[in-house]
Image (cartoon, rainbow, N blue to C red):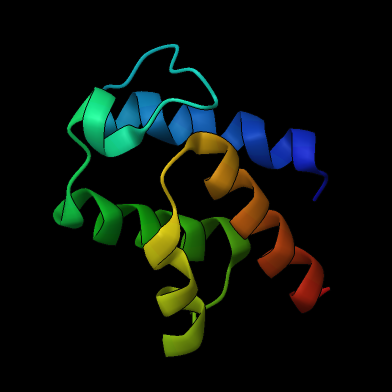
Length: 84
């Protein structure tokens, strides 16, 4: 998957699952969109479905520092490349 494809899919997930429409790629999800730990768990499940794989505990720990949509896209892009 290209970074652009991942970004498009992540934006779609944010809109359909979390009702966050037209977020800025540098928006702090916690501060600006009230994204909490339960949302993060749901997002991890969506990422696993997108990549058609289960994430390891280390993969999930790496997600702890994610704050923005760009961070999410970069994270998924790294995971996709590692699994390719």
